[in-house]
Length: 135
Image (tube, rainbow, N blue to C red; front, top):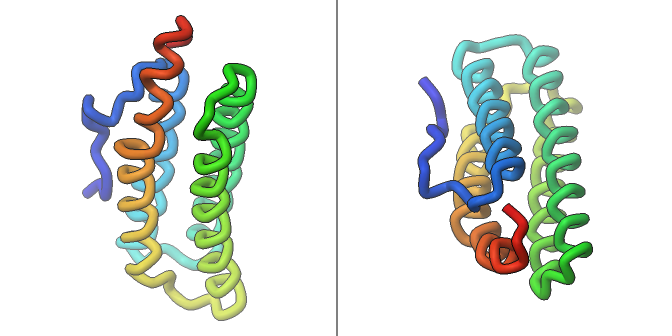
C-alpha cells in the first residue's frame, strides 16, 4: 500500500516539476514499502540515499528556475528545502549508526512534508511562473 497517491491538486501546473514531484512520491512509496516489508537495513539505506539524491537534484532545479525568473520567495523556499535535507540526513545518520529500523516518525515526516510542501510552498511559485509563460 502506498503512503502517498498523486492527486491532481498536487499539480503546480509545470509539467517537468509535476513529473519530478511524482518521482519523489514514487521514491517515498518505495521506501515505505521496503520498510513495511521488513527489508534489511542495506536495502533501506540504498532507497533512502536515492531519495535524498533525487530530492537534492529536484531542489537545485527548482531553485535555479526561481533565480532565472527572479522569484521573490526564493530565500524562504530554499530554507524549506534545507530543512528537509537536514531532517532526513539526521534520520539517515541515526539509522546508519544503529542499523535499527527507521522510525515511523521518518515516514510521517516524508509524506507530510512533501505533500505540505507541494500544496503550500510550491503552489506559491505556480502562478508566478505561469504569468511569465513558463509551464
